[in-house]
Image 1 (cartoon, rainbow, N blue to C red):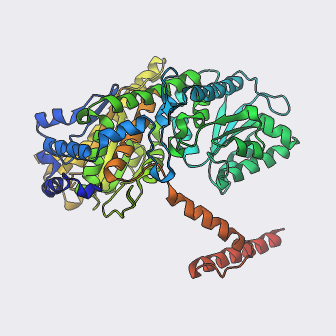
Image 2 (cartoon, helix red, strand yellow):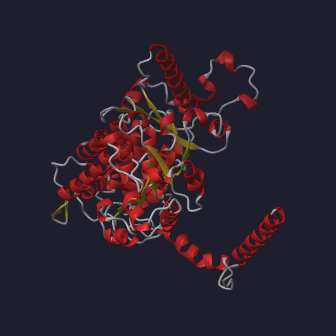
Image 3 (cartoon, one colour):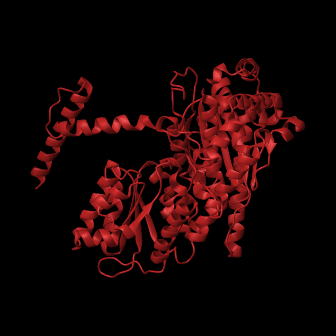
Length: 556
């Protein structure tokens, strides 16, 4: 049923009229409200919703709304392998990838547990060979650099997690350098290939279909680069390429040796695939034991989602905060603000997870939707963002909902002198995180009456910008796995309430297919089938190329 047809819609709409004009300063001095809007039901995490423009009775109404939308049953459907991706007639059983090996996973009465474990075991064997320097290139030298070639979910999740968890690399993994190439323009490969040795570089080509033009274009460039060093193509593909895909046939056709093929399944969505063999680069970075911790952290959230009542179910509550802001308070901008430099790629990962999943305007029943279905996400590491777009948050004209993410504790190493300095760094970091969420909420009233005197209008802060604070014990493979799963499930719950399918992404396909039709026109083909703007731009491109060519001729 559409969201605005649920029984709770009108009551919440009426309450939103009141709270949209209620300043957070009127709400943030009530200890009882604070207690009821802070949750620690998920191990290692505390979530504070008290800086949201709402009261406990609003949250109660939102929980009722979730029940009216059938959230409890839909959670069971997701976790049991029912068809939840309606348009493609598939389940979305990524949760099975992170379940303990002894836990049975069924899909249409077929157990996948052994297949999942077999795939994971093969990945682990390849990683151990690389770590042990037993994987050698075409001249017999051990591999020193691994390049992950993928795009979208085959790049963003592995890149984000590998970077975030770099300090957890065991000694055998720390000697392997990992690089990521995703852009179709070849700029990333052009940037680091000259610095690598083709004799000791291994490429991991990741594509669910193994037909993605961006990925295969970069992979073909990698082949040419190694061939130029004197390697035979058949041999180099055997010694310098690993394939990760849901299509064994396509990997074989491209030339990936069967022993180098890592498999996952078509019911694993790209943006949910880092838990599968797509997480190869993560496991390569943090080791097999670390990757298992990462999976265990996500599985802990799966259990929490399955076993916790909606009233204290953290992914459900996060979703309801989004629903309240997007659909009732009409706050559709959402900033992701981790106060941890290790999470510098986290906002980019969430941008794909949320906007590719829930950027939909048609319901599950193929009805047009006339309400918002997804916030617009962006973000940055908090201390950097303070010197960039926080100006808009504090004194701009847009209402923005923010997520502040911060670890209570930070490991600082064994060196006592440096350790003390890093403790001071983290203390300052925590203070900044808490101060920014406080000022966003309270505005100039965060100052004493004396400090407010004499301030010009340009020095005033309106405040009443809502935010959620997600506090976790410390960043580890386990807690990062939990954090990712927390947002995954939040996105799913929101989709249920919005009555949309979060597991397809038809919107990304049309542009790619049109690109294939335009490319011949850039090489002198017919332009008649194109619109005036595109035709004019192609002509401008060709003129620029001709001009640059003449310039090069003159220089030579």
